[in-house]
Image: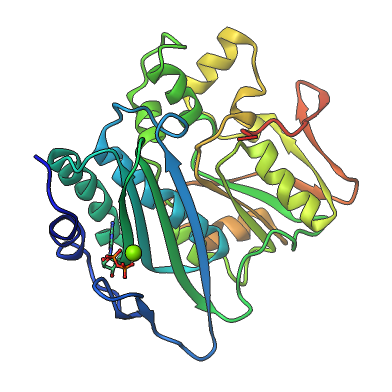
Length: 317
Ligand code: ADP
Ligand code: MG
């Protein structure tokens, strides 16, 4: 059933949001107001998800609600910021109550886990569903994990596993016959590495979230930092499903080039056992996959040889 705009905003969003102390004025006025906070900085990011580009028209709205928030919390984690508030701009062809109920369910289940307040937004009619979430997180001034701090000798670390979401997309679209519920779940329900992001200031030199493929995203750290790196194939964290795909197709570049992983990749100085011990309580696995070097370019040590990795990530244009 169709529901009117302001009822929709109240029922599906305003009444459901958790509160966060950083939000002094939330949904209902022309703007939200956020607390100032001396000595703090705000990290701000926005990501849009477009029907037909990021998801299919028949995509599960609960998954979309989760994912549109998760990808933004992942960006905050990559800066080392603590999530506080988000705004939501929602465009859709009609106000479908069942869709909204499921969407809000997925969205707020994740928002509750991190105490993120939905502080405002916009609701409009349009030809296709477009979901834009803007996220704001706080961190102590000067502590942000930027892309330009990697130094030769740093270890390169990666959370979680590589390539599951990319394989999940192939499985979900019928392009690969294997069954892996875990891979498909990783595509639809990425887990933002919030606790890991909060553990990294003071430890990591540089950090990025892997959304467009490891080769491309680590490449951003390397070019911003004016360095290069060599990764070890044997140390890449791959699931049995992804290993099976690589073995069957010979396409070893796949897990390095496919998108939607939403894992954190960071560089840190010092002994890798010490670094890994300091992030052991951050709620997800983390491994050292290579080392930063002075010579530019991204290399991969594999089967006694060294391959050059081009930038093979997803590009919209
Ligand atoms: P304005 O015309 O002043 O921009 P709107 O009529 O667009 O205000 O929205 C009314 C209030 O509801 C505002 O506080 C706005 O931030 C909020 N809002 C609108 N759409 C959403 C949404 N999808 N999620 C959360 N808040 C929303
Ligand atoms: Mg408005």
